[in-house]
Length: 114
Length: 115
Image (cartoon, rainbow over all chains, first blue to last red; front, side, top):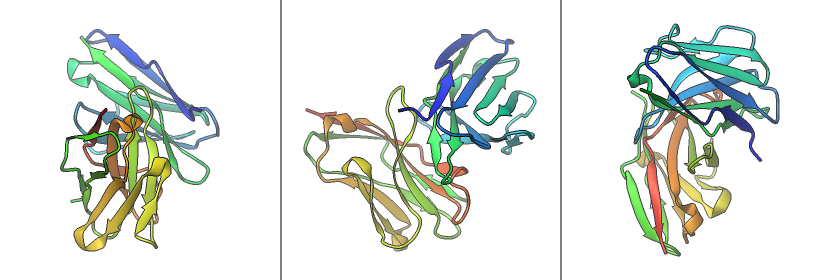
């Protein structure tokens, strides 16, 4: 069964609005979660590392004020895309680091900004 | 710069035929190496990984991969492809000894299977 869930699986929003994506670890507590972004026909690009109880660590070039990450509990991390623009349209994937340091990926959330 | 190259964007094979997906990497040292499969609506699933030791690695679903240091390659193989293998395949590298979380991915190879 699924180890990681994401909600919603697909969302459409208007330019200028904000949208929140949830990532849940279903089988174990996760102190670390990762957020990736995947453009069509491109590889996954790590956006940020989400640490429970502390601030997220963002990769170079990722705007922390635009992509707000909150890791409020050991089973939930959220990514909020603020003031969304059409260029933010992408596939967002989270992953969870398991107890043996292995990585489990969520099914992804497709964001379309109109 | 660290990078992963998957030269083939799309491959089509007949069901029952053998398969090889190519992966080359550029890394300062021998990295940890991974192959993932992504099916529509599903999260990436780990097929196999190489950390050290035997350079031929067996994975799930009948897949194997061979690490060749001299060629900086980690090609994925399967002797007989099934229709259910149609999916997108990603090669990834990670820092040796580090967390498996921070990975560098290739752009993926889409596999189509002809009946």
